[in-house]
Amino acid sequence: MTQKCIICNSNKIYKYTPVVKNRYTEEFSKLLKLSTEELEKKYSNVICKNCGFIFKKKWFSKKTLKKIYTELISSHPRGWDTISKKFNANYLKKQLNTLEKLIKNKESILKLNHIKRNIFGIINSIETNHKQKSTLEKLNLSVKKNEIKNFKNLKKEIKFKFKASEFSRYSGFKNINLYKYINLKVGKIKNYGEIGCPLWGMIDLAKKDSCSTYFIKPKNDVFWGANCKNRNIKCINKLSNTKIISNINGLKKKKLDYLGVYNLLDHYDNPIKFLNKVFKFTKSLGVITEKTGKMPIQHHNLLSQKSIKKIAHKCKKKVDFSFNNKIKNSGYNFYLFH
Image 1 (cartoon, one colour):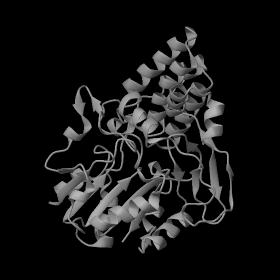
Image 2 (cartoon, rainbow, N blue to C red; image 1 turned 30 degrees about the vertical axis):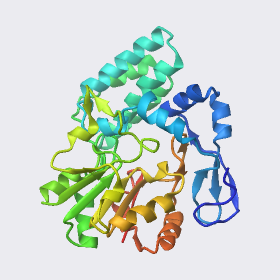
Image 3 (tube, one colour; image 1 turned 120 degrees about the vertical axis):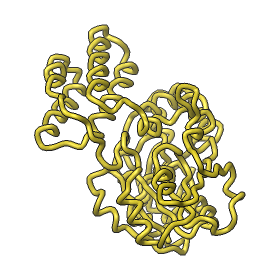
Image 4 (spheres, helix red, strand yellow; image 1 turned 45 degrees about the vertical axis):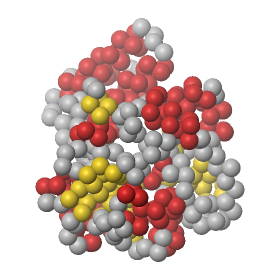
């Protein structure tokens, strides 16, 4: 159990209570035979008052994490959603119809939550005008409250074509503006790499830009991958003309011009140790993290801008924050280490 901040070594750490309950809360609870309250108490969050780093004092065993990522939730939901055909009005309406039936049949909260997560994931990914935003906010609230009559009426107003907002569940991080920004800051990328999820990043953009592309598999006690598949197709098989690296030590030193670490760093219980290792193989590195707020159970940490600066200092790197001005409404931050 950690008694000091692993970023700045301060002992000024205090309880951090904002948490979000999700599917992983349910799976960890069942696996460890703990109630939700017991789980959140045993794996509670703290915040460092010195650098703003939010983290879990106690982390799950590698055995438990491997069980989650290879068996219990073996496919990465958000990754597959970026290439799915679910992001449309018809699918949303079908989910609302299913929710109506579940409510009327008085099904379990777990079943209701599963469908609600699908609905919220779509609603929160839609780029909207003012009128559409108002409709979706009302729909969101009526779904939360199980108000069948209200969400049935609101469903009729969903006639517009969906467009995924930047950095959302259904667009992922395939962002041409971010790709151009990175090239502008670090110089023309020739060797582009990513580690984490093979489905939601910018590998395809890099290939179109005539880059040699590399994908590094994360360990299966950190992230999905080993059994991540949809309709018997493994996520890794969705990559083409990309060199797959099972062990980063197989790369030559400073082989990559750039390495993308997207929504992955918060899975490591020692971010500095991980970054120092991968910096040996890349000249620059981009990190995407969720903005500080509610902490989900499956994440070890939430990184503030101040803690990122501390990490950059310890890794002897410069860090650029300027792209965040362009994605301030996205719920994510991008940090460029070089």
